[in-house]
Image 1 (tube, rainbow, N blue to C red):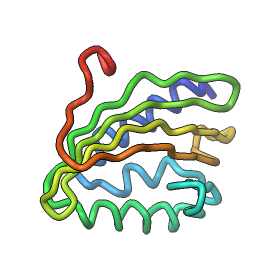
Image 2 (cartoon, rainbow, N blue to C red; image 1 turned 60 degrees about the vertical axis):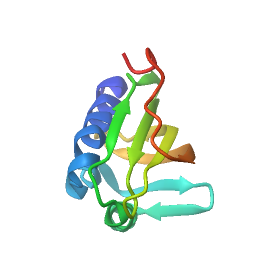
Image 3 (cartoon, one colour; image 1 turned 180 degrees about the horizontal axis):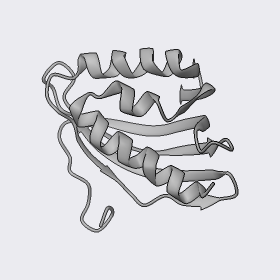
Image 4 (tube, helix red, strand yellow; image 1 turned 180 degrees about the vertical axis):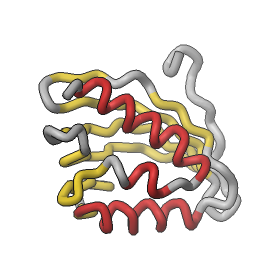
Length: 132
């Protein structure tokens, strides 16, 4: 397994799946027993847990999200991917800047992910050159 390729596949799934609200394209990259930490205080266990979390988030969005993902950086079985998104929960723009730490299993599925992000009300496109 090439971790960088697995991370790029993950980033591509989110980059296309988030604006389209395609939950399954995102969830299928999670190991069946994998855990996604939406924050350090909110673990989403397994595919069902991730599905519930993503459906909840997408359910609040009334317009397609605008998203940008950087090239993954990898080391061993882990990778990090920086992202920037402008979402529209209940028609109000919300900008999210974050980074996800990913650990992959032998089948190139996400065994664990931890999301670290900051939000700011309003629409703030990413600074030029961050996601070239």
